[in-house]
Image 1 (cartoon, helix red, strand yellow):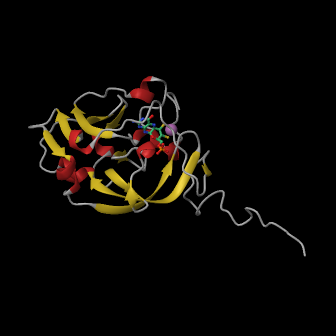
Image 2 (tube, rainbow, N blue to C red):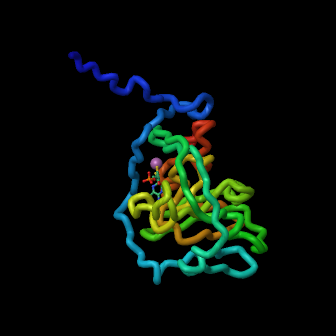
Image 3 (spheres, rainbow, N blue to C red):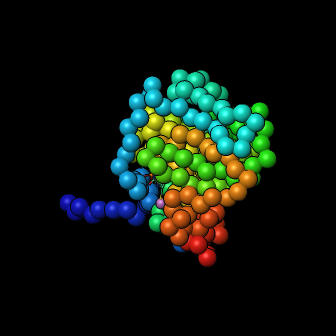
Amino acid sequence: MSFVSRGFTGRRRTGPPGRLPPGQYDVGEGFPVLSAGPTPHTPPELWDFTVQGQVDQPRRWSWDEFRRLPREPLTVDIHCVTSWSKFDTHWEGVSVDTLLAGVVTDASFVVAFSDGGYTTNLPLADLTDGKAWVVDTYDGAPLDPQHGGPARLLVPHLYFWKSAKWVRGLALSATDEPGFWETFGYHNHGDPWRQQRYAGD
Ligand SMILES: Nc1nc2c(c(=O)[nH]1)N[C@H]1C(S)=C(S)[C@@H](COP(=O)(O)O)O[C@H]1N2
Ligand SMILES: [Mo]
């Protein structure tokens, strides 16, 4: 009897055809954790989500109010600037379109801000029209704190550093203010298909 391990021969390393951006590899079943600091643990009674800044009127949801907003399931690919990609990840959450419904603004830019002080900046247009969500569920279970629970931003068409973990709100502005990694030399926009990894790319 021989024990021939077929090992990982069947494992995709490039993902489904046409879905691996340049310079990326398929991380497979793994889900790396990348956090610039300690994992905050904000109790639900102290958690809220706000839309603020250049808006007609700030919006605020408590955790219970947030949980009652219309929700949607989504299956998306995610791409980390450190070069791993993960295909067909399953999440559930509230579309940013739902959070911005009825908000009157002239703003073109957003800073997403998080417990622990993390921030990331995006053009407003990268968060609207079904491109971004605030998710609180991963693979059918409450989002693990190390992956951003209770809730994180999910902007799958940009590098994953734009998907702020432990997100607490969106600040809208007429001017573009760099966030945490953007200040430290990461690209301002972060489109994985154009390999916008670092400033100047
Ligand atoms: N609040 C916060 N959000 C964050 C980060 C962070 O350090 N703090 N890291 C970013 C980076 S660089 C990546 S690649 C992803 C990692 O998410 P994960 O740990 O769930 O894989 O979260 C992003 N969001
Ligand atoms: Mo990252």
